[in-house]
Length: 89
Image (cartoon, rainbow, N blue to C red; front, side, top):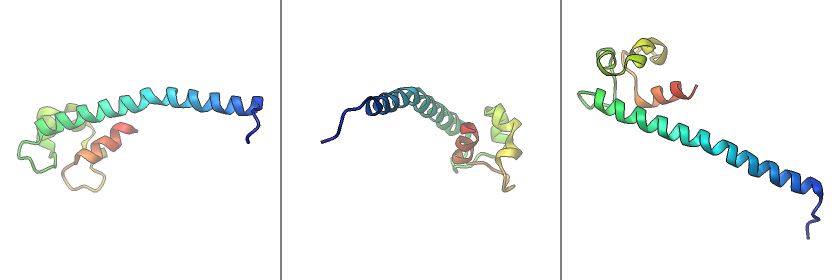
């Protein structure tokens, strides 16, 4: 049987506080990713899963402004995964 010491209670309280403090961040990530996915779907005109510079310029100006930074491998397109990684930074 575990002893109930003040230290154990403090650890439990700390864990509870961490979970509740982190919950809004997870919700923000999920809502941000949902918004990115919806906008990407509207902008990806040919539905190939890739956003080229012209598609970004017409529909996602922030992606257009940072296109070369997101397209680190210089493939001339970005994917939704690359955009989500950049947005998480």
